[in-house]
Image 1: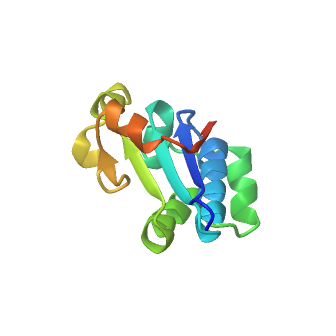
Image 2: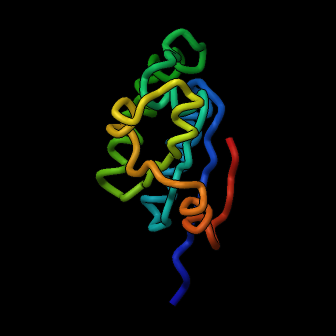
Length: 128
């Protein structure tokens, strides 16, 4: 039996394109049976939590015109349907200017960096 494939994504850049890329990868790989964890920090965390808008970005406008789903919605559904995990750290959210209560609806875990390091063991790593 083949070992479970894992993808661990460090998502730190703000805006539509990094979030959409992470969402599409997470949904695709999760739907194919892979385990996906997104470690979200800085501007990406602000974007995920809706504190940084991307509505005026050309790529977001093209996506909407094509009828594609919003990446925030995709990740929310992916968390429920296929077990995509989204994690951050308390220092990470503080550096993003956010409070734990603002972040909890969008993440599965606020944890320590050492725990995240252990969770990434054996995974393919990607930074966006």
